[in-house]
Image (cartoon, rainbow, N blue to C red; front, side, top):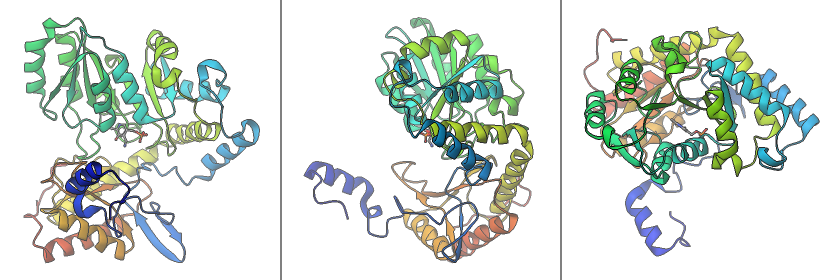
Length: 408
Ligand code: PMP
């Protein structure tokens, strides 16, 4: 139950909004030491579809060794903002590697992906400017839109006709404008139509900000993200944002942009200037993970195979997968929150971990299990999860007519 020490207003509001989800058997904030993509621990094997270890680096000895070596040499933390006393060679090594990988002139790494979006989006525009963003943007983007001095307008999710109409109506009233979108949307697993957004950016003379948190390492033949997926030049994107917490298996955020923009941010971006630099083991582990991504594109191919395998299997079984395009994130929707919560518990009883995502994170009428597929999953593990979900869906009458030829 909700902690009785919460103020009565907060407590009432939370109870109203979250209701029965906060219970002793809540699926959230659970200690999950045993849950990895594949893991035999405590004598019992669990399979996790809850973690975004897309290319399976989180357990790699190579990554762990690099982190340990770096701790031995540099210690645990850097003890200051990088601007004044916290700068270390491993920061630059990581940033240079990321810039090379993304094909941006330069890169800047921060301690949090969330903080990167919030700080950057809040920082780059002024009060005569226009910020225009997708309605299903991640909470960190929303945080940035709420602190910006620019006028912030949202367009309906991936509705680029609506985006164009808004640009047509508003662009000329503002000095500068920036479109914000995500390469791969984190709750629905669908992509942005980047070529069309780039055309709009050019037509209406705006900047383009793309959050590639979930698309780097996932999309494109070698994992270079939404630009590689569509064969677009990285230069078309003014600001590429990414996180170290997904494909790179650690934690932190980064920005890829022109050298001039990165140098400006190095001296002005609040989330960078006024926050500590990345801890040594984290930066070193991310660099090691990047090396694996760069040198083993077969992991990306395996992830893409597993994603398609999951999506086509889910559709064949009549599971509702909403907007999913078959790229690592695949939601399985239910008609009620109760079914989503029970499906979570049923999977857990069968050694599979995939927590439910319900209102507030997604609309009330679209409760789901959000399944993160990894290169480390086997087809047998995917089949088992899907078979269990199909049997559950049949029992609850919560399936749709199977699609015979999945359009992926
Ligand atoms: N952007 C998107 C699209 C995300 O989904 C997330 C978190 N899942 C973030 C940014 C924040 O990244 P982090 O968790 O690394 O802080």
